[in-house]
Length: 497
Image (cartoon, rainbow, N blue to C red; front, side, top):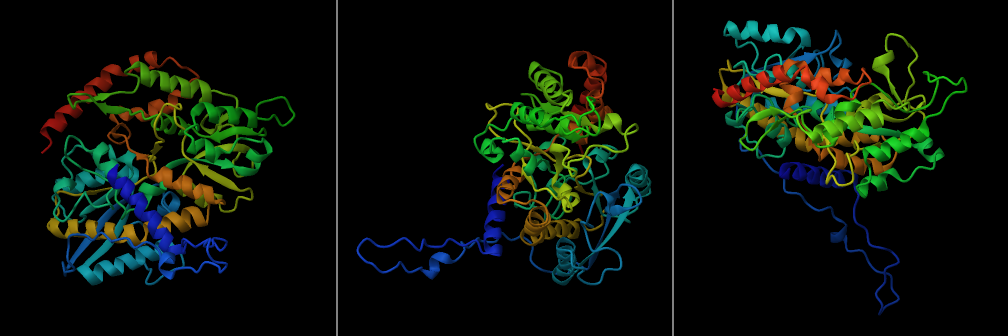
């Protein structure tokens, strides 16, 4: 958490420097003993200087090429990932006018100039990744050195002795702020860090979950100031459900259908966002540091999930598009002002650029007011995690590449992504910027969504389609298999090479 707060502070201060939000003297502020107007002190108008944290690697010529295997979905690599996170697209020899893409182009040149490290990137369709990796490593191939995958797909290659421990990779320092501490702490198996999130990537931030709300609709309903609710700790599941209920309106045909106006028009991902936002995990560790499947394992997780289902997912105000995707082609849409709220991710802002109505951003609500902080899940179907294959022939160069790219991105790309892509092009009000500070400072990861034994997270999602709330019976069908998986995970953690 300390690293997270440092990250947010540095981002905020860098935005201050970049965008000239300087502290100015009040022109009406006068000394009681003179009628002359106060004179600004130029020194007071200068932005606070932030000492730049440097990587512990001096510029040198490694004379090395890092080949990266990167996930994709479908034929178009950009369909889920708007940018090549690693290096410029094939054939790009200069800046193209997209700020993030241009930053990545500049980073690639900087890496080559200062460290003699070149980059290549190959996209592999995600269903083929496991077999591709297995085939390569079984032959001892060093064709690829670095691996980038989204969390949900990572289960197909985790725990198989394919990767080095990032925690002991030469030149990597997890104490530096460009490493995402939460991913390291939550996704390690035992003390072994196979995969982690870093600021050298883009989608670990782009996949951060949040709530969008339609500002004109909220105004028409005379809702309370939602930002003040967040600030006061009152933005809860109950509050969100109350407002969503107010928003639901029939179109006049006395039928609940796709032509109505809803409180929410989404898929089933919201159930995992709300569960994570309540501070819950699918996999946790007990007092003896052993893993156990915590979902449905105690009264607290059962109560939380039951509340989410009864108060949100099964209410008339919630349109679950997964239930109608094969029956209704014209789904109700947040962009068409048919939904007060929409669950999404930071990168969702790209799809809202042509939306006519103004919208705001909120964190996913807390479970109740007693909960101390907000939590924002990094969506395991859309994020990126990085790993290093155990066949690498120059771990010093690989570690240096990861470390200095993270450093460069932290100071030169993250702020542009944060300000321009998310805020400048997406959100329409200043308060949403402040909400984003809160959201990004409280990102949460869950080993249960990454290691994901038996693909059980999908079962949790699909349970929302049943209309049932008997979590105990649902878990009864799976408990034995999950317990066996936890035994295997604990054995793996105790013997991890």
